[in-house]
Image: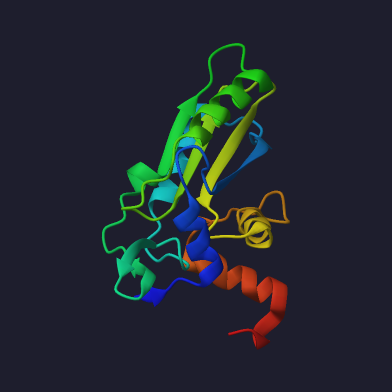
Length: 184
């Protein structure tokens, strides 16, 4: 178990149904030329669900100890729960996307699981799809969220990334890109 720092513990302790303490973001992408949307997102979903080693705290859940809150490693993460696939109703405008994201954002994260969800959303116009992330503020801050988003994407359009953003591998690769080999 790892002790949760005071600021993050505050986000957990102050959370109520009326004041959720999670953050969310929507990223829009264009499908590769010739790709079937449903097949492409199905393959992406399976790639994300194939993660086995998680960066902290995305492989951990919250437990209450005698002296505070702690992150406990989750040995049995249910990636079918955490990585979801949704389809927008026609005509697939941003209005429908934002309505879905608003609905997804209103529910609190399950405290018995790692505090994140990732939703792959198909059905947007112009061969676009969306990725909606919901992460508890105890698990990530704004800068961390930007780094997480960046680790999901390649700077080379045709490069294939074979790891999920919550994986330990993504974190190690991102540290190398950002800090070079000096960061351990």
